[in-house]
Length: 167
Image 1 (tube, rainbow, N blue to C red):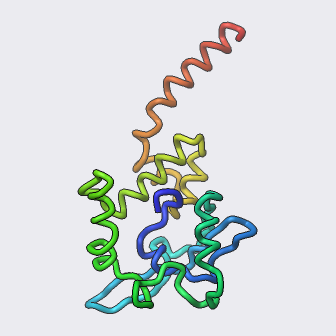
Image 2 (image 1 turned 180 degrees about the vertical axis):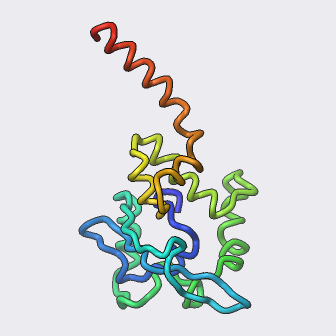
Image 3 (image 1 turned 90 degrees about the horizontal axis):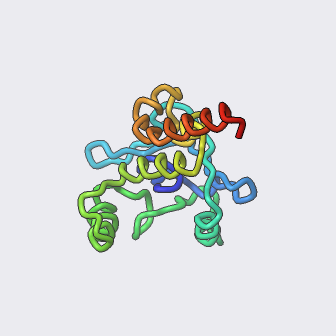
């Protein structure tokens, strides 16, 4: 989630058939949420499917998970099979791991912000970040993450100065 920007419900709904190893992509075509104790599948939050690029080091781990799995299998199943449930996963896996890493209080949704921050720090343009996160507009992405671009103002001023000085 920290490298793809997926929402938890999108991650939990991923199936083997949604992985394209050759193109290094995950197809986000559905999400899952829990309503009154039942997993309810539907379209992603913005109702639009998207393709998300996956860094190679994560793709290698995903490839291992795919081995021998049917196309309809969840990519990240619950320990006893079936769909991951956010509350259980947080209690049993995520929160203990966060505490062990000294990140007590972090939430799965914070990993989405981490992905945006990492992408911006790596030089991704706002349209790429928008597509990665599945936002409906670049304006929305800028509204949420504009603070991450503050350093860019200094870089622009430096570049303009260099141009004016003939450098």
